[in-house]
Image 1 (cartoon, one colour):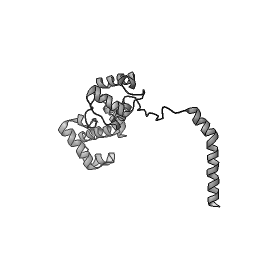
Image 2 (tube, helix red, strand yellow):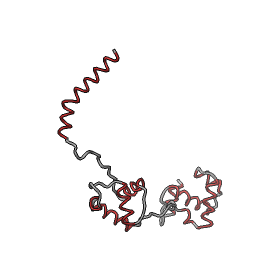
Image 3 (spheres, one colour):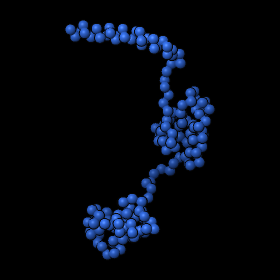
Image 4 (tube, one colour):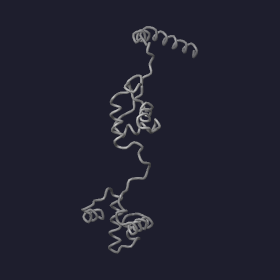
Length: 175
């Protein structure tokens, strides 16, 4: 019921979420003469919460009841640098002297430091890549001398014999 009234009275600037709407509606009810106790009961919150909302609105204006982005460190790369980073990644890892065309978090961290002078921990690079719509890649570690045909033949011919002999030894030991 209160939410419907809120939506009708704040058409020019609708709340971003229900918590913001609750704070704004509490201010409206306070302006209509409601006590903090009655507002708290109506919203199922503590009187202390209502007191904080009303104090904030009184000291800093009703705008202070709106949602604000969470504080945190400023991004080390600005929007233009992030765009440049995507362009650099599209050139491929080999264009920057890496062996194999795979972008790992460590390689991207190295690239960022080299190109922009900014150091990122490889674990954070994965979050940065996710924000940019990229996924870090993990190289497949295999010997360059690997002979796939020899391996397949070994699995087809030798492995079954080894498997049988291992099962036979296990039966002898348990019997």
